[in-house]
Length: 454
Image (cartoon, rainbow, N blue to C red; front, side, top):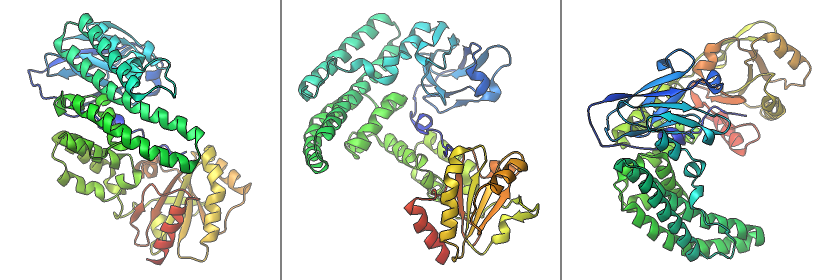
């Protein structure tokens, strides 16, 4: 299946931290672990989006990062890509992490700030589970549910305050707990809706859901506004958990919620997130318009990085030309077919999802046989022999040009990080969709009909 896009939310949530001081390094040491033999280790600083990239990893049995810390009270980082590890550091501190990839909540911490980091990485703190009322049933009223959630939150805040001396750390934990409250309260609506959906017909559920959501949202939003007004926007948006809570409210209950409480930076961030999580919009010219709309410098840096990374694949830019070898050993170029739309299937014999979609792709080619469009299937098998053997043993459409690419530059240029992958180029040899719809989708047929007559 296509896996070209990693979950994007972890990399875009969290905005500015306002404190500025003389920077001093903190040291983070990851003990040797098999996970780091497979993936590069990166940390993302929650407050600045600064990446500690793999080329800065010191050689040896362990992995060591030197993190530039500007806030004397401490700053937060996240383990990027895996996403379920928080790291809290202070200037001059050293934290040693025995990272457990299979059971991340069993990761062990030693050195400075070990207790703080262990606290931040408990399973319930990462997943909001601590505040859930016990023995929740469909008969539990929202009023009772809300009372128990706030009681659990108040108890947890008192525990944090009694354990830790750092005022900043306590306040930050309490902020996260408050936004855990928002997420937990929102789950009452989701829990109730799921229960009723199992019991009612589709029409009856739609009627029930409309009335229930209206009643629920009035009470829920009042509490949520009250919580949000306790904090400055920068205090809230510096953490993934708190930003995620806001995103859920905006997406599920009230689209205008952030604007109502004056969170303008969040609105920019949310708008960007909508683009970054929609591959069609991400590779459209809309991305080039974003810098003029963004006021926050941190978010602007992210937009500019995406523009730099994706500029060659945006809709409307000239397609990059490459040579491939056909089944007879002849060299073919993509540009040989300039003047007609080109629909490309990138696949390999070792990719089962690719082979499952192949008959649909070839069926689509037969359907458009009389129209002005070229269907090209590009194998990225390392060697040509498996590709040839597979094609000789499977039926193919006559109007599909089968090509083989031994050129890694093609994969790099078109960002082929996962297959099956489909690319649509228009008759003027310009990118129409760098990540095109899959064969079998109605949206693809509509798009092909359009490009064939343009």
